[in-house]
Amino acid sequence: MSFTWPDGFPRIPDEDWVREPLGALAMKYDSVEEHGWYDNLDPSVDRLEEALKDGDILLDYSGGTGILPDRLLQRIGDRDVGILIVDSSPKFLRLALEKLGDDPRMSFRLIRYLKPERRLQLIEEVVEPALLDRGVDVLASTNAIHLYYDLADTLASWARALRPGGLVHVQSGNILNPHAPEGAWIIDETVEHLHRRAVEIVRTDDTWAAYRPDLDDHERMAQYDALREKYFLPVRPMEYYVDALNAAGLSVREVACRPIEARNEEWLGFLAAYHEGVLGWVGGVAKIDGAPAGDAAIRDRLALMKAALSDVLGPRGTFSAAWSYVTAERAHARDV
Ligand SMILES: C[S@@+](CC[C@H](N)C(=O)[O-])C[C@H]1O[C@@H](n2cnc3c(N)ncnc32)[C@H](O)[C@@H]1O
Image 1 (cartoon, helix red, strand yellow):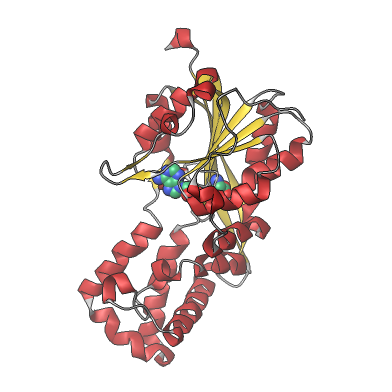
Image 2 (cartoon, helix red, strand yellow):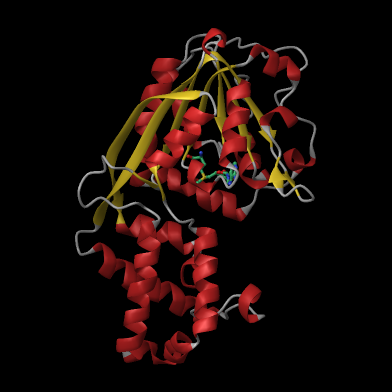
């Protein structure tokens, strides 16, 4: 392995986040690596393995804790590709650095939130011209595009970072896809169903009678609806993303959908890390009620999540989720 990054492009920037200790939430997120539903990355690894040649650079936008590069490097062995992870979370990126920083093929950049402008930095604001002038060959975004609140600006910055003819690979389990197999879940939609089932359980099962009066405080419940939508954004149709990619000069070449098997227990374990967003109204959260839930209320919240999710997903122990995969290509200069 002798991958050479361009002169004037340090692999690891000299920034504070690099020296921070590892964070618990990032480690918790990274444990999804062990979950069956993270097989959603397999079709992405297949496509990237096929697309990347020796000497190429992959930009993993929203690369998080580095699960995709980790799997890709295992798949491609000694192939001499450079992988640049760009992410908005210093804690996730710190963990990616811990896991992959020793590999000379890896580099890392943090995009920060600019408060006065109310936006995230663009790629060209954190990646040196030495690399941008060369352009990246492939850009991937996995399990993240549904989170982008300024999608058009983000996609335009992808197009600028790619070399002409460069490829984009996007995938997410939170896109409404007309090709979705019948009965397959959009993964985050399980949360709304869980909440509704939890409301029914509290109304009808006396075990939860203490939380029943909360349900009639409509103003407060509306605040928790809004909080849930902040954690788990409303799902958009595939058309919205295809149109946005095409409008950014990234011509969509392939749209596919695959069923991904998820174990109920693993999905519950993942949601448990975000219990305030899922069922915050059980016991309350500081932002809305002025004080966080006590230990007993959190135990109730988690138990109610378990009961409601099990009712929603049924007795099989696993459920099928519909994952969407999109490949696009940046136009060659003469086509623009
Ligand atoms: C669910 S994780 C996926 C991480 C990784 N790509 C994977 O598949 O494991 C979503 C990632 O998107 C990043 N992210 C969240 N909002 C973002 C935004 N508005 N723009 C860019 N990245 C964002 C988060 O920091 C996080 O690392």
